[in-house]
Image (cartoon, rainbow, N blue to C red; front, side, top):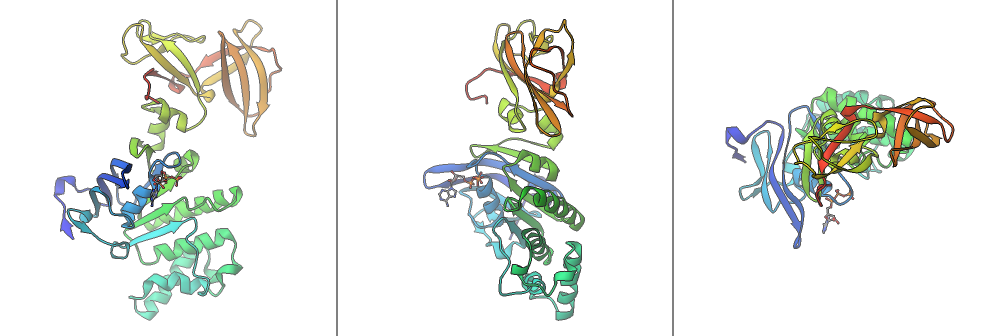
Length: 355
Ligand SMILES: Nc1ncnc2c1ncn2[C@@H]1O[C@H](COP(=O)(O)OP(=O)(O)OP(=O)(O)O)[C@@H](O)[C@H]1O
């Protein structure tokens, strides 16, 4: 393995300007990202944006056409070198990464521990099964377990050899919603308490926000923004980032005196120039509604969505959606005063390709 220069060498996983093409088609283009030790980073983005290819490059299952992969400051891909997955000491958890059906639970977990002394191996298996709450199932066969239990055993198997990196690709998508929430929560706790660095692929923004210390949002093979879930949600750099985390109201506007007008008051605009066409994005949860016979907005429809109510309203000629926590169902035609939370409103240049 080649030592990397110290200044470009954060510990953990470091992808350094990775590009990859299938034939003539570029699918990953100059991706640079770090997964610091013990951190969980999610690769998030729409279908086909290159998440899985990036993960496969980190695993060593694909060789990048350009760039380098570093693990704890050692080059494992790049500079003419390419270590295969089995030489990288990485653990995998995939949606369809099934357990070996001919091995019982304990033997599945022991699978990657062949270099350990027998007694140490048995102890490590018990320790791992305890960590994932499956110690009572050591002698069970995979077909006797539920999907969630199988996934817990797969996690124990992946972590047993103490990998220096865990790679997860849509690991919960085979589970139904209720089970998924529970297994996701357990998986996060086990990963965090093991202290392993983790890179996880998901297309689900809520899942990424639940799991990640840091999210790299991808589009067309590139990372368009990377940061903590709060940073991406509260300070999205483009309309694409803003709208990826949930429905938004999108309003064409014009910049006047450094701001744009809305029916609820002005919103400060970035420096786009006087008269510049712009896009105003308002999150539906950024609108607070108060019934008021003198209000400028009118209810078109109210819908209960479970924990929130969705109100369709008309204000200043605009059809907007507001999401209000709890049960709030004003009748059609009710007049409202609307307050806008400015932290939930963002103005962008109306450039083609901006979104
Ligand atoms: N082995 C391959 N040969 C050719 N093209 C491929 C191959 N693997 C992936 N692709 C293409 O590369 C692009 C990126 O695929 P990738 O699986 O990395 O995206 P993704 O973001 O993980 O998508 P998804 O969420 O749908 O899995 C897609 O258009 C896909 O069809």
